[in-house]
Length: 596
Image (tube, rainbow, N blue to C red; front, top):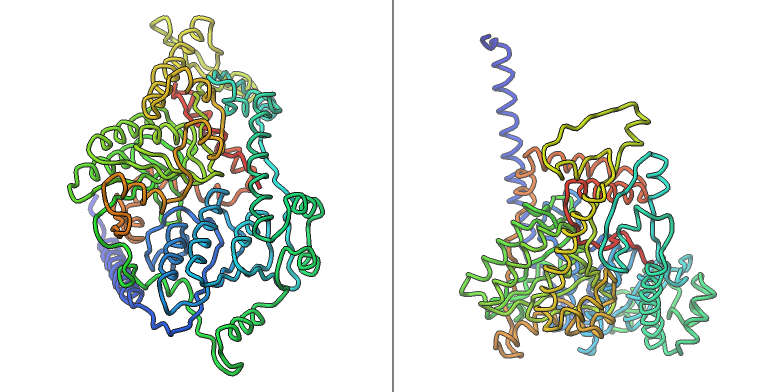
């Protein structure tokens, strides 16, 4: 049927309108970018104000439009860079760290503390200001010279608590049976589905993790505030504290409003009361290029970020900040950096609880291949466990923070048996099979003894013929030893170093320093950190989000974002169980283990 004249007219007008909107957006983007690239005018004797708040991912491309449309405003990499710049910038005399509720994990918190300590080595001071402080926020603040809390503020440094969720009761009510097999005494991801409480092994390593993290937390605060560990433990047991009590306990230096802090800094820097305090916001200071201060020049080192769950295909790096690791994307980045003759070394920054065993192996192979040509140094962030450790194991060196969650060398796989649920909703099905094991992954039947034997044989092959040998080779250890420290057990970075799974403590800066050393670049020479793959702009990501898969993912994220956190955790685990029903072996830790 021919299109009517009216319909043609509407279509043409709509097309023109869309085109104009796109042109306007592109023009606006160019304008914003141009304005954003102007370096701010910074007076001598200035104060730099930086924020620690929000999700704080490892890396977000510095794109003005991303910030304008609500993407993550700050990344850990950028925050640390601001400290590096301010340390050598003679115009900056003081840093004020505004600390609010942050999603950073304990390893990221340690990396921020390291950046603060490095900045303070210049003789300059850092002031921490909080309106409300929890364990992690106070841990970061304790690295500063001075800690200020607003008069109505409170400190909830109540100690650490590990929250572990179990779904067996819900599955039983829904008529779903988790037919799961896992290798490793401590591989507790399967326990989430098969149990209603912790096993003895699960409880053992959770207590071990908490002991290690808590002891380090206590010791750090004791050292920073001039107290004994026993005094700090007593203070924690009496928490929470209002600002007056916090000052009496020696946890803070002053209970002041923000304008009162500014007045004190003004006096410290020699300004009159009538003078205006020259303040530079972090959002403006990021426009001061590192090169203008003598940083990030010289030989090129590739920095590759691997953030999120590991799966096949392309990585997800959405405009709103959601990230996942796609084996195709990450392997290509490693191969490109390997083949680029101007790149002298590679730093792989890993923040991942693992995921698909197949995808992890593809990335492992790319790391192994790159290492044959140039040094590959892994920098572990908050989590580099199971599949996250698998892709790290063959690196030339592994650098982690003492609080990094790592290890979890083990395998879990299985399927949800849906018969009870299908009976409940009145659904029935029949299978017509050819082949003895053709029905292995039937959704309505448990594994038969023969099927389970075959299934367990396959999972054991993944663990004993792939995971353990590759870790053993990468770490120059005997396979029996790796098996003994594997078994699915999760370690802190400190414990991992004791067990030979980690080489040194430190963050991304330390990993770059080690990469320089391995590439025979003098320690006193700066290097140019090059991001692989080159980050897409906000608009590129937005316009590339039109394929069906990405649209579905965006819809799923929108639904998830509207749910309570516990519901989101449940659905993420259900997705994991659904992936396993197709026969995927999963190299993943209990990635929703929350320690606050």
